[in-house]
Image 1 (spheres, protein in one colour):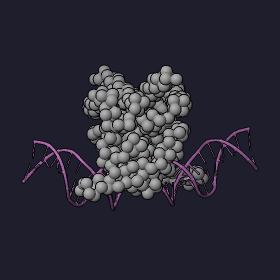
Image 2 (image 1 turned 180 degrees about the vertical axis):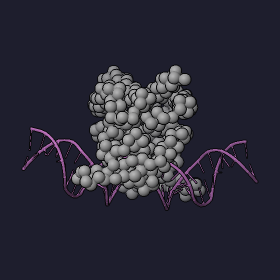
Image 3 (image 1 turned 30 degrees about the vertical axis):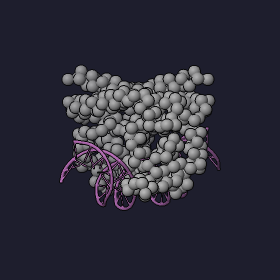
Length: 181
Length: 181
DNA sequence: CATGCCATGTAAGGGGTTACATGATTTT
DNA sequence: AAAATCATGTAACCCCTTACATGGCATG
């Protein structure tokens, strides 16, 4: 998946691994994230596969910044992937639900501590998403269109709806446990 | 995480790998899933670590069914894990959002095909969750209490809320794209 | 006697996580 | 001068996914 995220961003304009890391942290974090170690490794692999080319401008800068550019083969692979259909829904993996599922033997006070802690974290997450201007990404790309902004803001809406759902669920469980005090 | 799911279920009663696979498929699938290859491997590892013990009853059955039982060390490790706090929210990984994010160059008709396809899948998922009786798990465990049922049904509520949220988000995006026809 | 389900495993490859490692530039 | 940020990489380990592989039991 990271493969297509990198191809997707580089399809707008050439970038370094560091810039890609920063953009992923600031724009896809509500549905996909990656470590820098993973990004640099994958960029090398995509270059080996002929989907990207890279160059370091030794003259102009000593930081060894390697700028990656998507190739025609890379663009083709990206479009081919986008055209394929997802056979199944992506499975959810939620650690907190594992903990809740096996919580029957724990004291309500301890469970409530953890739930309230999680509630704060998710409230923070929601606040961060809401603080993002709808066009916070558009400013970074010359080639971004109104249509890009439509899809980007749609994924952000998902992130907001997810956190709102999560908070409502937490509140429901917290209220239930409190009423047993 | 699978480690604690296996310990968690075996904390109710001894079981075989096959039974654990079946129970995971029928009860935690909305927040965690695992392949049988992973389950058998992990059970062996947990036995090596002294958290489980297993035996095959050669006399009574030829199916080589290996029944795992949690040890005191395993119970301790499970409780210790439940007592730790999650430092961060679990990151979401949603392939469909990756696709939507990079969809600007695709035709609306193609995107709508995929979104409607996903809508059907998520509607099916929601219907399945709603069809589960609130006590569908309780019947399987002698030692399950009312309190177990409370937490189990709470995680199921999460699954239902998640799918409802997902459908509402899909409908919103579908409507937006349709209005551009 | 064929199909479907019960039952358990191994192996290869891919992807994700954490830690280690280094060094330049910019800001305070 | 110190601290923060920019910038790139490697290595070990673990987990997940897919495929391969085998064989017993039950039902029609």
